[in-house]
Length: 471
View (tube, rainbow, N blue to C red):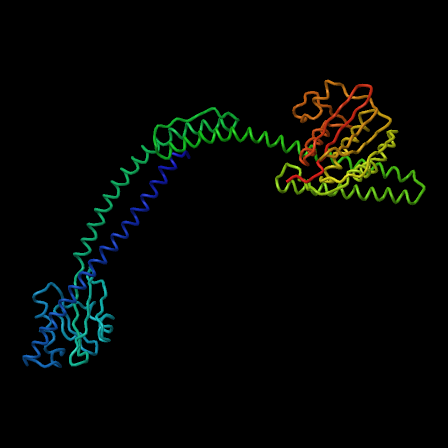
């Protein structure tokens, strides 16, 4: 079922329900109003008739006991009903109807008399002779006690006819309103569906990634606002998709770097595990186990960091600056990479004194692992020399090898992100991620990295660290 038919059907059902509710409310309200009006009229008749009855008693024509006796009560009831279009009855304290202006056998005894003799006027509606009667009974008080009561029977036939006419009028008016309303609904739904149809076609284009469609609506109502909002949505979606690609690139770069870093502790663990089989000294085995535990802990920390990063939606490295000794970090890094260095038949020396700087120890070791790892994997050198020195507010680490060097035309691209490098090298040994990551980690710590290289001579990597904590 189309939207137009749904609107039409929903509007029809709503109108019918409203008209039905109005019918019952009007019918109930009108009937209640007429009953209240008639009850008030009967109450006023009773007040007048009571005065007249007391006048008869005061004039000594009859006494109070004779007023509600079978001898005088029928005549008094007929007298009181002679000027009004009602049936009047008098009843005694024993609930006996002692006088009536007309004979209504089926209305002679109802619960209203019992209620009236308890001291309060009572009203009931009863059926009789093809119509309904409103019966009003009121107690007659005399010298502080109830000596009888008056009862009035009002034929409600006129009220029934009035309600019947109202129903006919209401149904006719309701049918007319329903027809006019449905015609207006059909016309409005047709007018409304035209821009919505255009919106539907535009949404189909959006679903396939085409955001060029724009909707033009001249009206200033909600439909016009919807069209304007759709156009704004298309612009926003197009912008968000561009930003999404950008964020996906950032996220991919982060996880590429993180997974790249997981290789270093894994390589060390495997290297020390292989080395244990070749050792005879128990102390050497214990040293290897110590390195394995240390690298396993570092690996676990990196995995937990990766999980926390995933949960928090972060894509940046967290840096924790602290005072650390660069020479100690260099020595530990070489010790961890020792199996790989020995396997590659590379000798190494460390020169320079201890130098305390403010760095993130974990990130600095990542830098050293990447730089030394690149020497081991790519330089084809036989000797690695690491020098430490202080220059003013900086501490310098120089990592120099005597390997094959790097072509001059490749130096400028070494620190470019992998997404910007056309000739990115990917193999089982390298993914081209290390040096861009090193540059990022150094800059986050307030440091810098530079490389000098000559083919056939070797390569020197210079790491510059700030000796003082930057605020």
